[in-house]
Image (cartoon, rainbow, N blue to C red; front, side, top):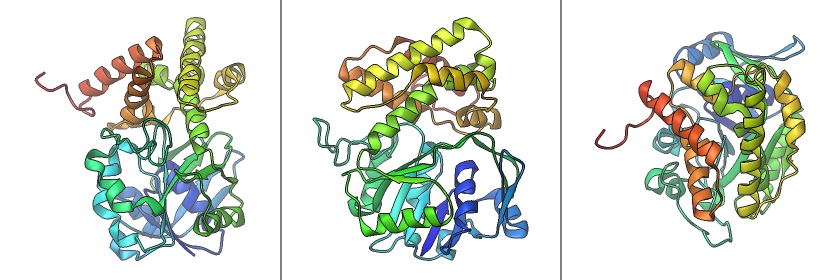
Length: 331
């Protein structure tokens, strides 16, 4: 089996490194100094207990160099998805599974949804429906991954937090032989994996976790646990999670999200969320997938989310001042 990880950053590098332990042929699409380091010295995943997983996947910044794949794991951040549409074509065969492992609401969310918004486009995430048109319904797989990860130096991925593994699911909930083959490669590599017909439930659960501290981390430029040193911010976190839970219910999804368990986890979590890592590096942030699109959905569903709305507005202002989020037209 041939598996390409498109975007070998913190999450993609972690998956590519571990998948190299399987019998699958692993390649990565990367760029810049990270690509050069992987090409010259290989990819290393550092684990919390001090061990590491070395690998040497084939690496290029040109997908055409890597050829047609059985599966592609797209692990770039949401703002980079338009560039994926420009480049992914050479990796695709008739039965290639393209798994989009993302934070926040995915661009395909309403595809085969079955509800009143079935088929609705999300132009903030897939401008002009380019990905929907290019990838095609039969290839699309959704995915989420949970590890707290970062890139401390080129060619190195550091895992700093517990992972619940990777969750995969098709928009229509079906399981296919191709998707099962991808999951089996994860199992062979000792990567926890779940194939579920209800991936949207888990998407919302992770989004609620992202909301629990991420916005406050961005605005304070602090790790998660630092925001929990102020009691008022702990209560703010509880309000954010309550708003997320109300939205989850309004969207017809279910979640076993335990607010107090998350509070306990966040009190100890020294990780900087990826959205903050992007801000600090001057990279485009996943503002729309994590905040803007869920807020639009809340408005459409008549669910009040005032705490998140205020924090998201402040984050957009901050990102505009950094030059990494579009300015309001005419401003």
